[in-house]
Length: 429
Ligand code: DSN
Image 1 (cartoon, rainbow, N blue to C red):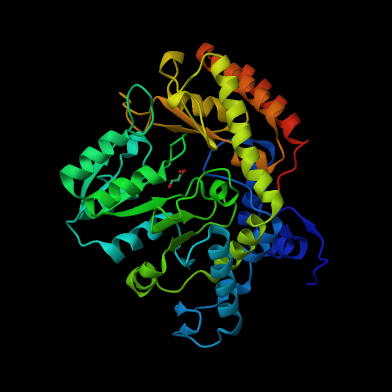
Image 2: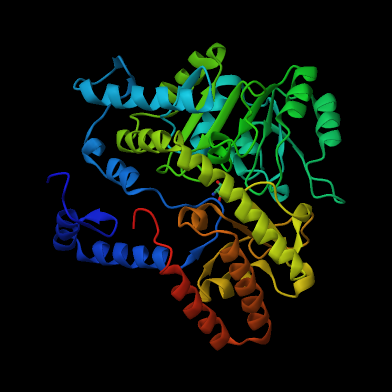
């Protein structure tokens, strides 16, 4: 198949035809999912659209190869090209983020975080992280996760009055518990993370500061969020959120920690790296180094601000009062609809979101009071501030329709959404 092979949809035509012949059920479901991604306004802040180039590298013959080890030090033969691909990926990650070392093998964010524990902690050690209900991540010590079971986990939170991380509490807990490791970063943090303040606290108690920038990696790369480099000696991230790469994880660190991190990822935790995803990541990192990605990252933030302002103007309560990044957390308590009901109604109206706890939520995580939305995917489609105003209007109308039980109104909004999405082709589809 030559480079000019006709493309339609997310895979080249010959590949699509082959899939249809071999497995029509999967081919048809894949086609439906593609249509869903095309026709919906996707507002889940941890999702995005990767480019056709990233898709091509990730869905490639590199899945056929085993390569346990690292470039130049493998346990399998035949690494002539795999080594070159992984080394390019490492070099691009180092250059993009300005770090001394990068490990690009973690299968995703949770394994990356587990590798950090394996490198630096012993079971029973004390760790300090943002509590899950306040916007943290399961792997930062939450009790149902291995990180909360194997370690003595202490959680900090946000202030009730501001909805922002309570740095006084972080300092107090660090002094009281002397953690081995402190996490900063999370999954529902709409504000800039003060890496310098975390670094001061970690230094004062001799803890290792680890920044989990999974949500904001693309913003950091594009200069739309301050970088943790120079403050956190170890940084973990997923590769598929704002960074717009394939599913995967990555650990960035100072030279001092390189060996511990590499040993923890392999052979400590994982076997063979997923070479196809590493190639996709290499492509994404090249894209992220360009000027258009820089503009993209800044537009993600401008769009989120515009969306937040349009929601505030319609009387919505936003955790922390707004956003500095790609993410908005709506507290629906005063709107008389739960997060789950809201997310379901919005999905019917063509707007894909996810329900989420809000800090101090009296409701349970399976049907919490909040809705988490974000702008990475819509910005990848080229939507700008005027479209954010439209989206806020649709969210408001849909929730109003849900309160009255008016399903036809939700379907009418869905039709308007579909009409608008046609004007904004999604990358890779
Ligand atoms: N699933 C990720 C998110 O949606 O933020 C966190 O792991």
